[in-house]
Image (cartoon, rainbow, N blue to C red; front, side, top):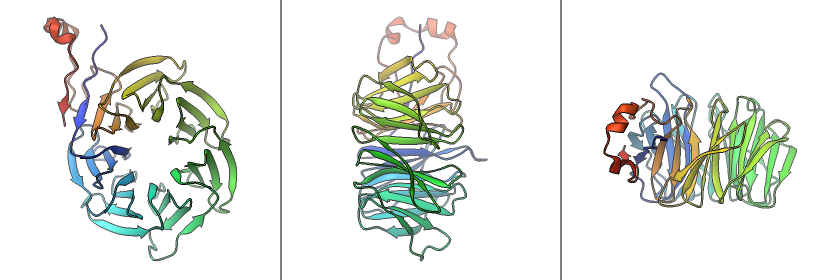
Length: 329
């Protein structure tokens, strides 16, 4: 009998959760930030989902959120025409970066010295955080709002996905387009995996994997429903995806075989990401919750306790067929 997934449910948000990101592994563990339409991004302990704090200051929906590698800084992108940088230890606002339209995406360079933003004004902006009063570098070219922008290739290049149905690869120094991918429909999400330079993208029902430097297609998989987000396991054993049918799907990366699918939420799944150690993945949904799921079900990790087969057999058989219990984090 396959073991049941028992997700950790993280409540606290009052509106749909639209983006989430993990930090790297720090001496204090790793951390998770969530962006929500309630305008109140939250920081949590990554392995348990325990709430640490809420970043207060935005006056509109928060569309994007990120942490730097060591979880000392956070950045958020919002509908109040601003991006903000926060001290992720104290929770204090450090900087407000005014924009001309809704901001959708924020990401730090590896050294945390620069912040890349993108949004509805179709421009990419690079802010030097050591000189916050200096005007940002601006990169124009997209013809529709930008949904996601990421650093790649040791921060020498930028990848951006927009509603103009393109992904563009930019050179940071020349600020010129190096390569472009064009699709039949808008790209719904984009993840960059440093190890192996893999770009994970979703559009329509498709989950596709590209070489981030050449933009050559590696492989693609079609899911049963429209997919909003996908994430590749750090060891590239599996990938997970979630979308409009409220379900989460787990696939074998090498064979593309569907390994698991289960109803993950009470609304469409907007974002899904593996933790930096690959032991769990987090999902965020229209239903206002984040859920944490084990990569290897039954393993003792975080708040999960290993259940031995004989203990499982001793359970009341009726219980086995009821809906999976939820652990509130």
